[in-house]
Length: 294
Image 1 (cartoon, rainbow, N blue to C red):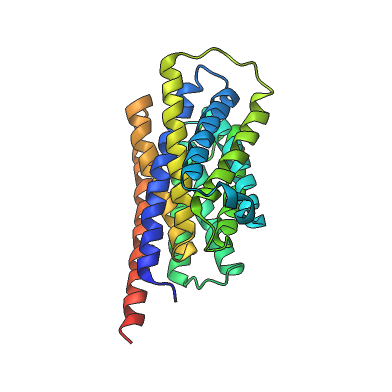
Image 2: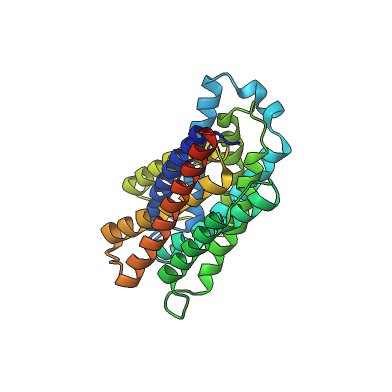
């Protein structure tokens, strides 16, 4: 039985992961309005890699990087690289709330994979909550000529990479230091972004743009670290559902920065998605309290 405190730690880590990644996404989308997306992503990823390298070096972990880099660490890192490129490329051409909502197909895929591959017990109430949450996403996205175009296929493709990434994280040996995983991940992401930037013509950037990219890089580091921590603690099927927190975060940032005001249907979808996540958390707590009292 998974300790509820471990699951709670995973949930908190997931919430922080979503917040930092959304800060990164917001900055990348804003800066990429004036600069090539590949250039922005490569510089951001390179900065993040340098910072993580220094941290790992200061921790005295560099000699152990090779021995701790298992096939699961490599698989996770490659999937992170592909997920980053395809999602953020799509994000530049979509409203941030739409892209974020589309990417929330990941919890459903992770829940199914957790049950089928990891053998985790997923009760019918949690399955129903996941389905209801997915319906909320559809209400937010409302597929059609205006809300869903071909660029939306990229965030959808990122769902596949994210699912494999999270499952790979689960199989990483407990003794593997998260900082090492973060370093390998950042290296792979930088390589993927470098390949994308090689197809573009770079442009000169302002000091302000560079400063924002630095902030995005730091946010990305925290996001990766909390993502790793979230998938290594608690019930993966439950923790994964709290990716839905990205949606209200995205709505708020979209309103503040781009003036996108959610309509009533969008607010209804948000309420359904958030409500389903809260209900799943409640049911998990009740189940653990019931088992503990026996």
